[in-house]
Every structure is written in structure tokens, then in C-alpha cells.
Length: 219
Image (cartoon, rainbow, N blue to C red; front, top):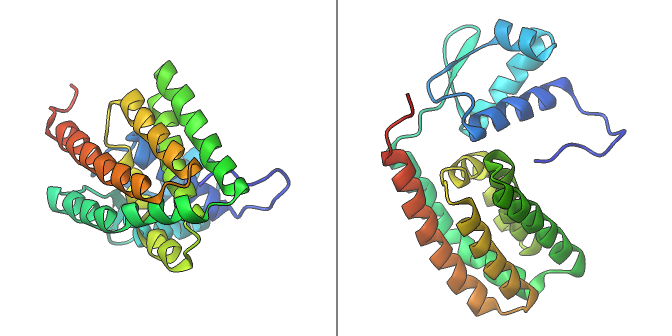
């Protein structure tokens, strides 16, 4: 979910959806907070029509809950919501990494490496939003490298919610280190190691998300 290449046209609704999506994933828009068309339009310098379209897209992605008339709220994920997302990842992630190890092209490996390098650099300097975004990019690069369009279609349904879930951890360098091991397995085309490490990584992610959700909110 990166910026479009220079010179590419991007509809305002897409730009608005990306901005609000990143705020939700980064946690700068808190769960339950109101998303009012008029206010978002003024904040982002657009009319209310692209804001309305962006909110509809974010509702479809599962990040926003609609309300009557001209506003919505940031979705409040329950423990059950998180558990269901984790179950989906447990069913799909090991397969994604196994197939990526078998099928990745040099270009896909380069994209995977670039995402990990951004994640690692951001983690080492303590830039949590950048590290988490790059970690999500890493996982999306694995989906592409799996070479399975059905897996890609399944991932697209939950992609934004998975990006939110991947942001529910605080151990930036620990996650980056686990991604490095996964990257090495994909680079070495060791499919079974990639799948095993993916299962171990999911256990880490589940524990990290549970700890963060159990921690008291600041302030």
C-alpha cells in the first residue's frame, strides 16, 4: 500500500482512504473515534464526495464501522475479531512462505529484501510506524512471491485488517529479526524451513498482540 509512482494519476478517494487507513493502522485515530465527512474533507483539503467514497472503501476493508448519515467510527476490534484474524493467518501464512521459497523470482526476492531492509532500519532507529508498515509490506511481498493468485485474492479480502493486526506489537527489532530468518529461508529456497519459521513467527505475533491489548492504555 505504498505511494503511486511519480506521474501516475491517483483519485482523491484513494488518497483519502490511504491517509485514513494509515492513521487507523498506526493508532493515531483511536478505535471508536468519529470519522465525520465534513471534518475529514477540511483536514485533507478535498470535497466531501471523495471522503464519502473513501469511508465506503474502509468499511468494506473492515477498518471502519458505518453510522447513519455522514459519519462513521474507527472499528473497535474485539478479542474475538483478533482471534479470527489469527486463525486465518495460521491457515495461510505457512503456505505463503512455503510457496514463496519454491517459486520466488529474483525480482520478487529483491522486493522482499527491500521491505525487510526498510523494516530493520526503522526498527533500529525506533520508528515504530515505519517499521510496522514495512513489516506489513514484507508480508504482502511474500503473498506476491507465492505465485498463487487464489492466495492473493484471499489475502486481498483481509489485507487492511491484517496490516492493523501486524501493527499490534512493540518488539520492533525482534519482529525484524524473525523476518530476516524468514527472508533467508525464502532466499535459500528452503520451503520447509520457511513454513516452520512462519508457524513460529505466528506464535510470537499472537503473544505480542495479546500482551499489547492487555496493557493499560496510556493516560
